[in-house]
Amino acid sequence: MSYQSLFQQAPVQDPLLWGEAGGRIKKEIGYVRHYMPQLRSPLEAADLVMITQLSGLVEFYMVDPRYKPFYTGRKRLNLATKWTTPLPKLIGNQNPGRNPIDASTFLNVALGEIALWKVYACTPGFQFDIEQPANTPVFTNGIQPTRLSYGNTGSRALKDDWGAVPEVATFEDKTPVTINVTPTNMNETIFSAYIMAEGYRYRMIKVTVPNPNDEPRVVITLNVSGMV
Image (cartoon, rainbow, N blue to C red; front, side, top):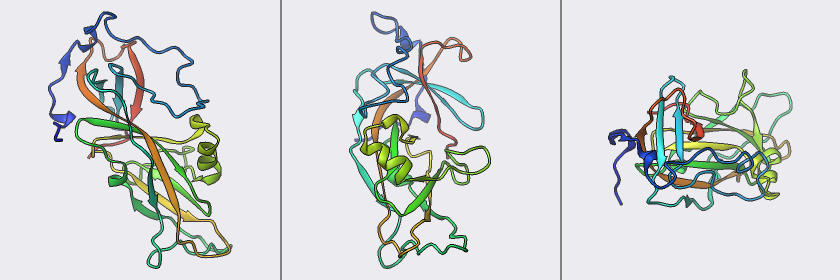
């Protein structure tokens, strides 16, 4: 099915006046907290979303009330290719470097949609960091990218502690994602280095709001880092 890009949509004026309640108000504070014992959708139909970019651009979108959130299913990506580009054994006194993997097609969604992905390692022996776009770390301590691994991502997903699993937002196919992988296994070369991604995707409507600087109905703010 073909949809129109959100960039081409004419903003809907005052869409939050639809319905008996006159639009959603912020969810209660306990709805989506850091502890999430189930992987559930953080958004519902007609929720208002504010999307920000590094450039400072701010836009507002509403989850299309005609569609429910769609679970993406689990998607698996091998960051090493057997026999051609494996992850080499880590040598203690050498810098292993970071091998960039283009994960854009892995996480892209259809025109008119955004997605919230939980990304985690499902095998040990490597670390990875996420850039969106290239050279712009999604997770950082302010100086260098945060290294993710099975220990701080996959083990959390296994325990259903989804609030501790890193989350990445993608906007149609406009937000390219690069995953840099680094070997940590000092015993052998690795031919399988899998990450998993799962989450929810949403049909969206571009909207205008009365005061972009003071909109209390925003349910979530997403920083998509940059668009191309």
